[in-house]
Length: 381
Image 1: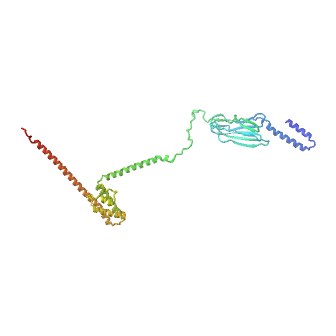
Image 2: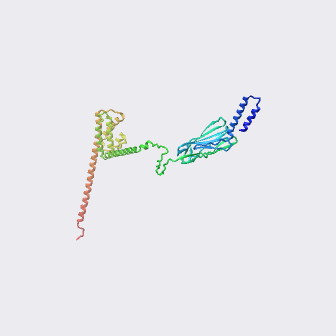
Image 3: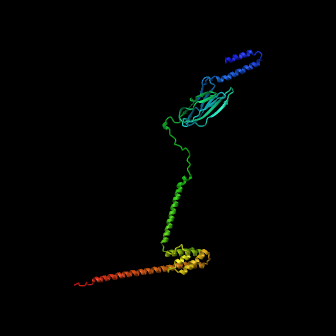
């Protein structure tokens, strides 16, 4: 500074031919430039820092100034806090800001680092880096940032950040026995599908439906068993009676009444004769029963012919004709049943006669044997 003043004095003495105003302006500009340059050439005097505020002092004679502050300086476990690092560097300098990449450390980053730059009037610039952090332990914890690196041309300078700390206080009571831990929480709220919420009700409904189906099936099977246990003739009469109760002829469904009556007749004949199966056509049924003396062939042929005309040709019938055809079907059943009963009676009589003859022959043989046993033997005294 003394050298600058002496140089200014010599300039003022030598400038006799220059006006006084120009000398004064030149002297003031030279003094201002020298003072601005001294800002970067000499270190700033250390200033007292507040609590949780750090001032980084680079080597003596450097042109870099740095400092940091932690806001707030005291937090609880998991609470967010901010570390702000401010560095003043000359124009053209580049700063490499460190980061915390270890997610398992006691102090972790909550967001990327934010850097803001501001220009200075006396030259140079100010860079301010904001770190959004969170601590997961208690006590005075070091933040754990590496050194910031300033590169200016071929010169490299490190700014230590190891002194940055934060105070984390405990949330436990003074007596740890009074501390009641909270229950663990799920990472994500569980979404229960609707079918898991309603499956008990659906299971009950399905069980009831299964029981109802089993009961209905057994009921039908019982009704079918009772139906099968009936004699073919009784079953045919039962079906004819049901057909009469339906009164299809009176309802105008004469063709349907005749077709159902013929179906009852065919079912009866299939039960009485192995050859009269339900799969046969009308002509085949007549031919199959041709050798059966129980069946009235002329009446059966006429009835089946009229029935085919009604079912396949759409033949129209009067009420009287419909009653006549249904009665003919019942009459054929009665005729076959009568012949069947006569045949059974004849077979029973023949069987009884054969058994009686057999008994009489056996009795005669036994009588002859007894008489033979009572005769005196030849030569007996």
